[in-house]
Amino acid sequence: MTDPFSLFDKWYAQARDSEINDSNAMALATADARGRPSVRMVLLKGHGPDGFVFYTNFEGRKAGELLENPHAALLFHWKSVRRQIRIEGPVAPVDEATADAYFASRSRDSQLGAWASDQSRSLPSRDLFMERYAAAQARFEGVPVPRPPHWSGFRVAPERIEFWQDREHRLHERRLFQRDGDGWREGLLYP
Image (cartoon, rainbow, N blue to C red; front, side, top):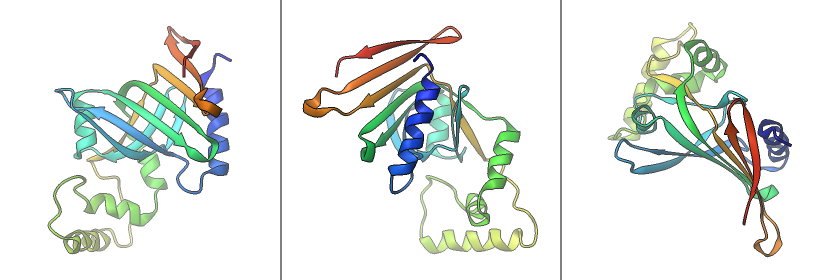
């Protein structure tokens, strides 16, 4: 098989059936302009041959690092099926229409939270955040909540995708797909 996206779809479907919570959770590793790494969990909200999409506040640390150094690594770890997938590649913001469409699909409370949060910045008290949330509720009462100008998504365009399958005695199976022009080159890695 030389199509990593078909294999991803198969593994992802199995993970959705077996993971108790958040089968779409993935670790996102970034580095700032000086190369200092940072990692956190985000949720996959779209995927296909053009890449893997997640959304965030563009005024937070992760977006700042991605805008400074537009390369990232993703890791899906599904303990229930004893598998993981590593993805590496360049990152770019999604287009406005894609961000608007996803934002419109979110719950109203999540939409309001995007307006209330100064993501990753120091918060003096939880009460202050809840006051800002209440202010956003009042501001948008009776009308659709628009996407904040500072909120959008990123797409990681994969150049490397590794599929790791746990095996007994640490004799794991590792399949590596690397971008090769318009296609993919497949190989194996030692465990």
